[in-house]
Amino acid sequence: MTAFSLPFKPIILKPLALRREQAKLLYSGVRAVVASSGMYMERPVVEFLRRWQNEQEVMTLAVLNPMKQTKPEILQDTDLAGPLAFCLALGAFLLLNGKVHFGYIYGIGVVGCLGMYFLLNMMSMDGVSIGVTVSVLGYCLLPMVGVSGLAVIFTLKGGIGLVATLLSVFWCSWSASKLFVTALAMDHQQPLVAYPCALLYGVFALLSVF
Amino acid sequence: MYASRRRDRPPPPEDFAASYGYAGGYAPQYGAQEQEPPLLFDDPNNPNPPMGYSSYNPGGFSYAPMQSGMPMGNVFQNPLIAGVASQYGQNLMGQGKEMVDQHLGKYSQKLQNLKYYFAVDTKYVVKKIGLLFFPFTHRDWALQFSKEEMVQPKHDINAPDLYIPTMAFVTYIFLAGLVFGLQNKFSPEQLGMHASSSLAWLCLEVGLILVTIYLTNLSTDLVTYDLVSYCSYKYVGCELCEFRSCLEWPLQGTILCLRGTRDEFIS
Image 1 (cartoon, each protein chain N blue to C red):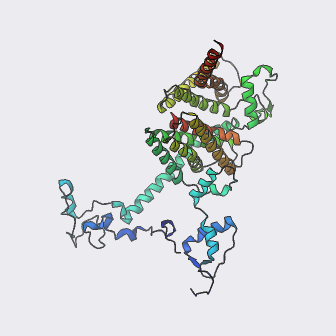
Image 2 (image 1 turned 30 degrees about the vertical axis):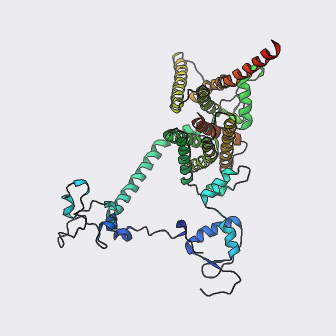
Image 3 (image 1 turned 90 degrees about the vertical axis):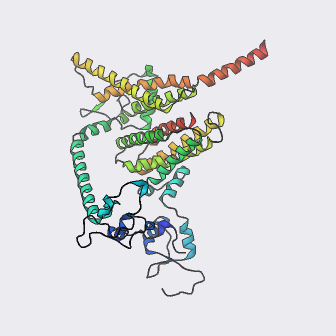
């Protein structure tokens, strides 16, 4: 590598990051300064791109921000590590509340995911894979995990708990239905997809509250 | 700077030969010999290979098998065994997939039929639930047909569907759990028991109707899916009762408050 005399220090990215970088460029539309050998980027560009997240963070942010428009591409690489982590976190918070419900979380999760998979394949023109279903439903469990964490401090049977639980069920099902509808391009059916998600998260809420 | 996070480093080599020199997975601190591959057979040239850990005696078990030169570590790190195992696994998966496709092929037509019952949209669902609660002003109950086939539920409010029944069933179970919870009698296994028993009663009811149709030799266009659909519409009404039960405790609280204020101000 010849040394350029630049006012800032250039950052050399390893070739194995090429695919990730190309994906970032595709999504963010930023043109980088590419040298003939390897990828050579200006520091401000890299600092900008470093705020780009991996798949887990993208999905988590999509769940936490249901008002924002999501791109259908984020559902192309579905991963199951995030959902697994969230389910374990839910079980851990319930454990802090004195309830050992890991088996019920697993059972209800599996049955709920299979039911949603069946329903979505019946209702949509082009089907959805089980991986996408499990991934979306698992990621959208995050507000419920938050509420069960709240239950360590407040009791959920009071007024504030009721409001928080209802809000979280609504939030979870809204995010899940938004992601499903984005992925499957279903029209006029978002409330129909939101309702079974609300039922599933309502059952999780029953586990957390009672 | 350079990628320092684990996920940004290049992945470790996946070929087993590279990990071959790790002495079959034994931890180095047990004094494994330098780069000694695990042997699966007696080497005639070297019948007694040096075994640095044959003197290690965990828990007092006899280690006579270990002295024959067979490692008891992970045998799948041998590339031959790993190759054969993966090939076998792939064959099994291929065969399994073929069998599944073969058996499921005959169900694909039934699944297509089932898709008809889920072709609903929000407007249909709202109107149908309204019809279920207030059927008194509806005049035209006939099903519409187009080309000998029933019109999709999206376009005909009288057509049976299976979306509302499924959702009604699950909501019924969920609300039952909620009512139990409000009475401090909730346990998660109760949900499963309630769901199983409701499903059994539903199957019994649909089965009775089918048997009756058969015994009385009725000629009808009804199929089983239609019967399930019509028999499950009742859960929507059940939910109204459950919802009223949910309100029991707040309702009693409100009544007590009102009584209290009345007694205070009037008596």
